[in-house]
Amino acid sequence: MNGVVLLVALLLIGIVSRSNLIATAACVLLIIKFANLNFVFPLLEKRGLEIGLLFLLLAILVPVATGRVSEKDLLCTFTSVSGILAIAGGALATHLNGEGLKLLQIDPEIIFGLLVGSVFGIVFMGGIPVGPLMAAGLTALFLGVFNLFK
Image (cartoon, rainbow, N blue to C red; front, side):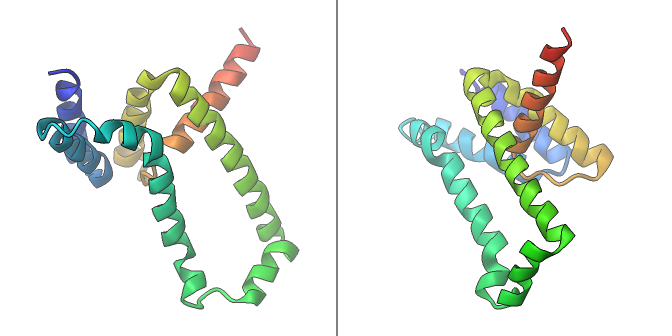
């Protein structure tokens, strides 16, 4: 049962750490595997990130669609310190996410370390799991700094 043991372990980690996202993802993958729907795996691998980001962006943009964010509010983004820092933070985050995606493509087994770190952050640091991409981006940054000093 290639991968089943690891998926069950992730399911248990998700349940113990109260991370519904990790538990649900492991559960969905187990269902796909046991239902012998293996054709879904390449689709998820190729387009899953895009689909997940689409839903994340939809959730983030709801205040714009409902009118809770006005044009005046958006103008403040370009004229306030917090808005300018938000632009810088967004640029840095997307760059790190790109580096994290490269890292995951080169070294996919690192995902388990990212998930363990995420569970640690959820359980002991009150964190919120938003996905492994930013964690991979930070890991890529840490590896880059580490490689500078070795």
